[in-house]
Image (cartoon, rainbow, N blue to C red; front, side):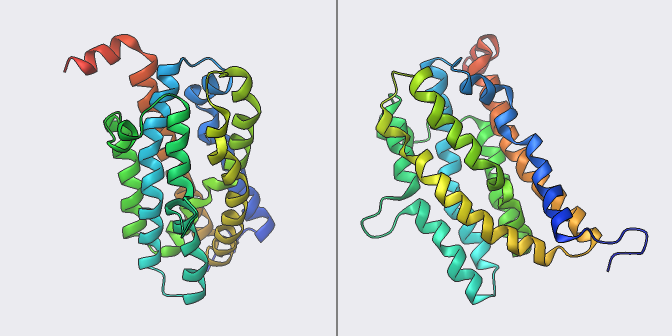
Length: 243
């Protein structure tokens, strides 16, 4: 239990601490700032979509890993919808298919996206680290790591508001993924936040939760770092291509 010197934060205070981590969300990374301002060229937008596809197809693997460590039936019944949200269910195509449609809307071919041929090593390394975390850590910690979704609706709303103006060459029906995630992310946040506030109930555990959320923020930041190196620095990109 927390000591008298470091008593646990109240649920309200703890949630505020978690939300304040949003200052480190990748929406503030220079790559995403440039993208939001309409400063990226078609090759850079395509590169971002192609690389983020690796993250998209890894989300169900991450959630399946969480399920494998989750002994609580009611929680499994809630959490499994995250997999079907991305993989699809019956006639519903799901988020992965919606992301492929985004790729096609920016000028990529389906085979080009699904082959992962454009995925740079830094992106793969960061995403794989996230999956491994979910496989190895207690399920409550893995649930906590998903709380970057606290900050996701803002970035999706921003893209829906600005991309039609900044990137008129993108087919607008390809933006459906962002529309879907505004609603889905809110539902997902409610579930994950409840678990986190309940489980991390001492100051030591609460500080651990903040570290976990920072880890996930770092994963997303590393993705943008890798894309910056590859797509925004031509000299470095040429060196990469030339081995």
